[in-house]
Amino acid sequence: MIDKNKLLAAIEAAGTLKDLEAARVAALGKSSELAAALKTLGAMPEVERKARGAELNVIREAVEAAIEARKSSLESVEINAKLAANPADVSLSYEGARRGKIHPLSQVQDELVQIFGRMGFKMAEGPDIEDDWHNFGALNFTPEHPARDSQATFFIDADHLLRTQTSDVQIRAMEENGAPIKIITMGRVYRCDWDATHCPMFHQIEGLYIGEKVSMANLKGCLEDFLKAFFETDDVPMKLRPHYFPFTEPSVEVDIRCTIENGELKIGPNGKRWLEILGAGMVHPQVLRNVGVDPEKYQGFAFGTGIERLAMLKYGIPDMRKMFEGDARWLSYYGFDAGDVPTLAAGLSRR
Ligand code: DAH
Image 1 (cartoon, protein in one colour):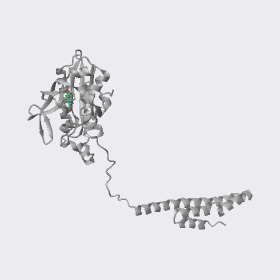
Image 2: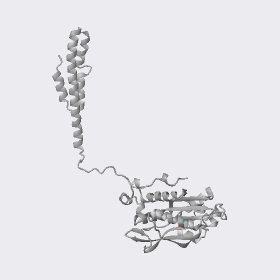
Image 3: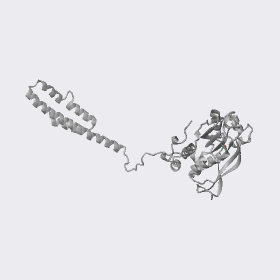
Image 4: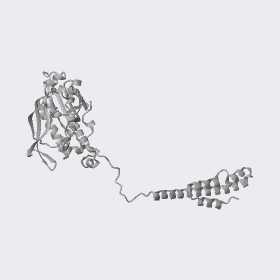
């Protein structure tokens, strides 16, 4: 006779999942009393077999149910033991997954892409390591030209340097596509500078528009539209001040009327000062000749400025060097949420 209570007691007595498995094998396994009893059923007369079979089934079901119950209670004992050994502080508040922020430089570059994209400028690109011809020569800086001094930089060898300006892309784009052309480019440039508003590496945006009838008036209109859209204001009092760049003639620097108070930029006719914001001019005929464009047929303008500076002015960022320290606290303060950034697809198409 199988002692059901003894089997159930053995299951109940199992202290670990391993003990329980041993009890299961003893109660239900191949060499168990139950298995042996089931084997004898076949030789019994039918009436007896039915009665005995039902009896054995009751035992088996009771044993199986007991194993399941014991198993889940042993499992929770194990989990509780693990938690006790390595406690979690459930009173700690959960901040949710930490989301990153868009760096203000990326934000501003996306804004620029949007603005100039709407004006019909296409995107062009150039390398960080540039040769002397594209960075200087073709832009009308002769080897002894004093204007090179204002752009002291890092030379890789006698002919290669980390580019000092994105104006090199004017040359590359015209060498590739000739005229007419209407492009902007953005990227890293390098100079020997280091203070709160200058870094050895920074970013510039450069624009170039060459056509048969592109004039200085178009330059002024384009820059005015740009400044209004970028600084999100209707009135941007602007002054074109004569300047010198080797690759433009005439050359200008563009100032805007504004006041900066507590890091906040207020643009308007009541501003207290003129603030230099970009360099620009009509592309020098020699630059056009250098890239095989006929200056008798084509003319146009170019402009360029620092992107960090635009970001610092618009978003009240005091120290440029902090932009590149990778400090998450700085970024969580000055950064932007992903939804604030317009998508590239809506603006310029990359060439
Ligand atoms: N490349 C100049 C610089 O780095 C900025 C500049 C001035 C770009 C006049 C231009 C321009 O395209 O026309 O200082």
